[in-house]
Figure (cartoon, helix red, strand yellow):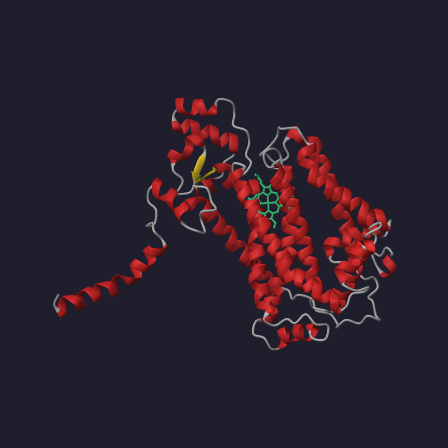
Length: 426
Ligand code: HEM
């Protein structure tokens, strides 16, 4: 081969390098046919968690409200900001608070980073709880999704504990006394209460041992547990046949093939109350008979939309509001009243009536009822619709419990003053 031919070959290889590199990662061109859409979902590592097609109901924003996805994206934001915070933080009672001040005073974007982490954590507790309410009120916990609901209850508990363990780390007055109150509630458990408290604190009171334990739980044990549970939760969604949806009207599948497509579309619209969003430019009429659409790009675009919205909300909150940092810990000066984190204020309020029943008895019964709900509620009707009439009793009980819980939190947050006496917030 002549020198000139060799050089031309090399030049062509260099020119084609970007394209060849790209296609070695992404084996499919941008999909333009149904076959390519399908293959994009299962040949991409990040996308293959998606099924090739999803039922249209899955994409109705008004059905899921995107709450499960928002929970997941908040967790991702927490992981990223948490890892960055770990570069500066030291879990030592003599250094932790100073590191918080450093973050505020001398680390570029340190305050902003901490704000993002703090607001995402609060947001995640609230959104996971709301997601659970959505799942209950649409009857989505019923067969075959009972076990995914049980996993969900585990996710809720781990999320609460993750947020609680993080609360101590700044080592300021707010952190110290909130955790002192929180862990003393655990001490009310009969027989094993004090042992559980000691296991958590590594000592009789909140101190260096507790800070180290909370740190290890917060940065390693609980995030790893949550990741595992989320992985199984997502896997189960697929194995359970995708998200819940209303029962198909009888014989619809048969009639769809017999009636003109446009008429079938109208009928589906009446059944599912389809919103325009779902029928974007990518949604093909050919997908109508089995009521599904290709995950690429329909589901992907919806997910991207929720992701951008979540990030934008956290960025805005973090620009507008600073995460609190009070005075450094002073074990001789408890604030009066010393309050638990807001999501445990309902517990603290109940504890003020009865230490055992408020702190242990009722919460245990509540968690057991949550875990058993799909096995106790055998009524198969009313799945896939908000507030279905067939589920009036179950929904009424659930809403009542949620309202009572919220009332207790509001009382604890705004109506309790020194020595836990009633005060007016106005
Ligand atoms: C870290 C916490 C959680 C994450 C990241 C998460 C994520 C998700 C996502 C992305 C979905 C599908 C879309 C959606 O419904 O928004 C989903 C569905 C589901 N989740 Fe969760 N979830 C969490 C906690 C929970 C909790 C606390 C429960 C209930 C106690 C729960 C029970 C379910 C069930 C049963 C489904 C299927 C719903 C259906 O088929 O309509 N999840 N979850």
